[in-house]
Amino acid sequence: MKHLEGNFQNAQGANLYYQAWMPEGEVKAILLIAHGLAEHSGRYLNLVNHLAPLGYALYGVDHLGHGKSEGQRVYLNRFDDYVVPLKTLLSLAQKAHPAKPVFLLGHSMGGLIAGTYLLEHQSDLAGAILSAPAAKISDSISPATIFIAKLLSNLAPRLGVAALDANAISKDPQVVQAYLNDPLVYSGKVTARLGAEMFAAIDRLQAQATTIRLPLLLVQGSADTLVDPAGTKLLYQKASSTDKTLKMYEGLYHEVMNEPERAQVLQDIQTWLAARLP
Image 1 (tube, rainbow, N blue to C red):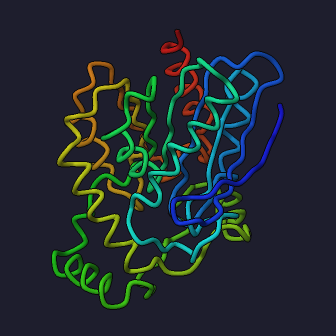
Image 2: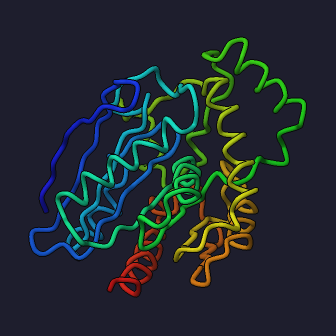
């Protein structure tokens, strides 16, 4: 397996870090990775190590304000600051591997990013995989809280308002400890602006999900407390894709590819991709 790293500038001139893993032999297809909130592209090695030897070239970008990319941590001006760079990443991958089918995988907030990308650019892709996508505002979040988040987004956009519970990512204590010890994982609070932009992006995705028509795989842990599994089910129901699959894994937490049962999840992803190659 070959590994490369690089940077490209976003529309505002910030340097975004990306990396790619390629098989030693022929490339069958490209898989773009959109990582989740507060983490980075380097946390997907379980997926990389499973798929790269099978002929897939995997490309991941650290979103603005994440990982090795520039920008204030977990802050943006608008949600498209996360979505638009996927187009640049796709162009880089296609230049390196012309005429190869391209798939997109997004996890958690990355699932929301990927879903938003599909609303305008699904024709670029042969299919998409959404892992525990942030596709529904939790019922535990009151309308008053959403209103306050939107208000703070305008009045104090950089104010930290909430942090993720690391213990909810996986049942595997080693995964949780590695997450906590990872210097590229942000452990502070999410900014008000990002929270408000995510709420708006979720509303848009749910309103326009019927326009999604490409092959779609959704994978979700039933015991996920970081995103609402009902959002994944709702997205599956709304998508107009004639080729769509929902895999609900009983008892698994948020990061299904980092759970003790990950071998089954990775095999399901492999099987789904292989069936949709030319």
